[in-house]
Length: 268
Length: 323
Image (cartoon, rainbow over all chains, first blue to last red):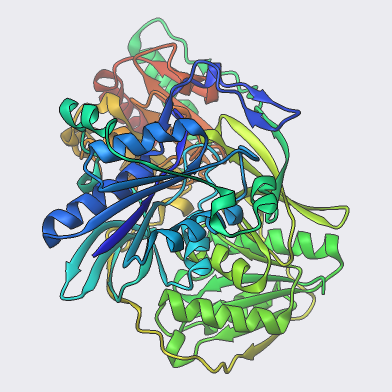
C-alpha cells in the first residue's frame, strides 16, 4: 500500500493570545516569538497512518508539504516518526495561499511522486482553519473523500474507516484510492520520535521542488488567490467585563453566583 | 441568477442550525435581490419541507431511494446536479459534519469558491464576503470569494430564523438520475448521545476542563449541577484528551461550536482554541481557582474558588432557591 500524508507547518496555536499580532496591511499574522510546529491534525493523520502500517504489516508512507523553507522541520520530524520519504514543495509566493491553490499544488506533487492508494491530511489547520484542502484535493485527483476520520484499518484490499460525526461516529467501507481527513482521538495522539531517530532524520534524503517543477500554472500558484482572498485581518476586541461575585463568606458568594445563574437561565 | 440555496438534511429536522440558516439565506437573498430556495436531502422530509416552506420561496425535496440515507459521494452528486439546474449565486450550509465535508467539493464541481465557519455574510460591491475567526479565535478575517457560486457554511445557530412568508412556498420533489457509487459506503451509524439535546442546540451548557482532575467528578459533581440547571454537558480538549469526558462533548476550535444562552465553564482555563468554540454564547460564566485565568476575560460573571468546594454549595443553593 502506498500512502501519502500531507503536512502543514504553522505558528504554534498554544502561543498566548496576548502575544498575537497581525500585520493589517499584508493581512498576515506576525510570527513574533511563537514557535513553528506541525499542525496537530496533520500529526494525527501521520499517527493514524503509522498505526495502519503497523496493523497492515506493509506500507510505504511518503510525507509532503507545501510551505516555506522552515517546513523542512515538519518533514524531518515525520521522517523521525518513521515516514519513508519526504518532499517539500517550496512556497516562495503568497505565504497564505487559498485552499484551492494548495490542493492544486499538492495534487500535482502527488502525481509526480507516483500512485497512492490513500492520501491522508488533517481536517483543518490551527492557523487559518479553512478545513478545505483535503476535500479539494480529492476533487483535483477525482477521488472520493472521507472527512473527520480517527481510525483507518486495512480489510482485505479495502479500508475500514471510522469517522466522527456531530453525535457519534460512523463506519465506512472504502475502496482505495481515497482521500481521508483526520481529526483527533485518544487513539491517534502523535508519538514522540526517539532522539536517535531525530538525529538520523537529518541525514535522510529530502526531495525539494518549487511550483515550477510541477507542470502547473506557477504564476497562479504563487499568487495563491484564485479561489479567495483575505480582504481584512484584525484582532477582535473583547470588552466583556467580568463581574466577580462578592460576599463576606464563601457561602454568600456562592449564593450570589447561584442567583446570577438562575437569572440568566430563566429556568427553575 | 441571484438566488440563494440552502441545503438541509432531513435527518437533522428543523433544528436551531436549520432555522438560523433560513434567516441567513433570507437576508442574503434580500441583499442580492434573489429568491430563497431550500434543498432538503434524505427520507422522511415531509414535516421539515412544510416547516421550511413557511419561510422559503421554493423547496426542493430530494428523497429518492438512493438518497434516503446519507452517503457522501451520491449526496454530492445529487447536490451538484440540483445546483447546476438552479444556478444560484450562493449556496449556504450549516456547520454540521455532512455540510462541512460536502461544501468544498460542491464548490469545486460548480466552479465556485467555498469558505467555512462564517459568522457573518454580506454582498459587497458584487463580491460575497464572509467574516470568520482565524488562529483559534485570536484573529478575525474577512474572506472575499473570487468565484461563483459562493458556497458557505455558517455558524447558523447564532442567526435568527427567517420571518414567515405570507403564503407557503412551493414544494417540489426532485427526480434525479443518480449512479450508485460504491467507492465509499457508510455501513454503521452510532449515536452516542441518543435522546439528548444536541450540544449545538443546547440553551444551557455546563462544561469542565483540566481543573476537574478526573473522570469521576464529571459524573459526581458536574452532572448533578447540569441536571439542576437543565443543562447539557461539555468539556475542553484537555479533559477529552485525558479521557475524562467523551470526545462528543468537546467544545472549541477542534470540537463543537456552541451558542447557548449560558455557558458555565468549570475548571477551564480558557485557551484561545476553547474560546473559539464559545464565541457565540450569550453569557459565559466561570468557576476557576485562578483569578487571572483567561476565561474570566470573556465572562459576564464569575467566582474564584476551588470547584470542589463551590459546586456542592452551588447545588444546594440552586436547589433551595428553586423551591
